[in-house]
Image (cartoon, rainbow, N blue to C red; front, top):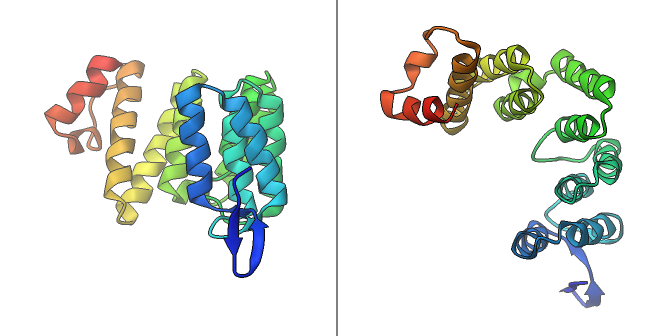
Length: 201
């Protein structure tokens, strides 16, 4: 287990984005996501937070459990992230829903998506993007389109140009798959940006 010194205290393990980045890079290189998940899960509980919340640590551990094809363990980590209530980069309810779908617990996953809809999640472009992607994976293109459109509107109310392009491309691809005609939001993408999603859809 990697250690870092803090002040005069030796061998204090700290939660940091850099440490978790290194673990993720090693997991991607070796393909051993279970080992990474176990290590992250332990760090999330035992280490001293420094620049990253315990909730975010549990989130990232859960993502590694998903990549290790162990959604049951992922559920535990995502629930710990929610219970901790600390700051996280993404809303933990989205990957929790993904884990529920992986466990064939569609009713629980659908309940989480409804909970997200009824909260202020649709005002966050990235959350809209993640939910739209999740629903696309589940074959719910109508629901995915609704979330993608909500995300575009949230971007236009704010100043997130990068997320706007991602959502416009996703939305366009979904509309193509649904056989829908071009609309005003689709026209916000130039022809070169349309070519990729259209060709890949």
